[in-house]
Length: 478
Ligand code: UDP
Image (cartoon, helix red, strand yellow):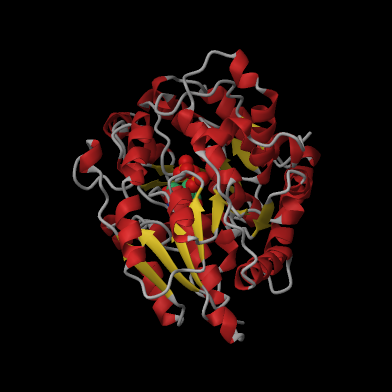
């Protein structure tokens, strides 16, 4: 790899949103491009750089050309306390827009950093959530690609919703921010997506009818096996990690259900109690990741009062904090994944070839549920019907323990239907692994993307914010 000196000279600047589910695929993408001979710089802030420093160490040890540029996060200017540099540190997800506003203040320091460089990067790959990077691309005449943090199915759904003007028929808050994201996306040279073509062939094709370039380069969690063991992705794992993996070693193949709701979701203690009761009453061995958040204390009190851990001893394993998710999912003992359907978790489950129980909470998680349950038929829904707005998902008990128990039984069942589901999941996992191997579809797409930038075919598209409402629906996607 990386034998051509021309490719050696390429320099990509990666600009992620400071949130775990964005930083994780971005750092994996950095390793991937560096492994293909590209010099990569990732924009981070001091606390996030500290959280991801193992990546830098691994990269150095593997002779990968990855650097961090660490910019002070202007959180205090936007009203946040010191140390709030990542979305998982927000007191409430209701403050997301404020956090995005703070993120946009990184533009000036980043421009200053660029001005001082001897030569500019050949390409910017910026997060879909950071529309202000459009101006950086234009000001410095650097081709900009957008990293779209969910799947092509979501891309197509959003495009169709936008073209149908259905939003105008329902009462909604003004969505200036959505328009800016749409404009930033449409004005980009192309999109980079953490998915693989075989998984989403239909939606890749549909989206490309609109004429925008699209490179599927994932699953990123599978891309860098040779240079990392995935154990410290995104955070220091809680000390239970080794115990948890050796506990899994002691369990039968495909017998354990892994329960985790990503890095942001918050639930009421009473909702978590419903989940605990279901885990206790089902016969299934489980790993349950309990995120440390403001309802933890109430839940912990309940666990103690009910003597919960004594009751599930030998059959259940609780991780408090951050779990080595990718490792757990790929362990032979893991037979199911109860997920909130964030795209990273969804794709990690697919890549590991495990069937899933779907418990979406907000945003595109409901699309991902549809993909798992109705399109791929590798998921069983717990039956949540309504989306809570950002930050409000904690305010309602939406799922009862009997529904969770039913879904676990259905998923882990030994009957024909569950067996077929398992087979389909396994197959998708096998194809995922092939796609990132040398010659596979994602591997080749990385090569094509690098080639595209190295041939300097880029067109810097001028686009004004006001164009967003006129987004191109001429090639309407069906
Ligand atoms: N993750 C992890 N350990 C945890 C919780 C989450 O490694 O205890 C990782 C998970 O593997 C995934 C990311 O954090 O890569 C969560 O992203 P996702 O898009 O699924 O959900 P979000 O955090 O945006 O809700």
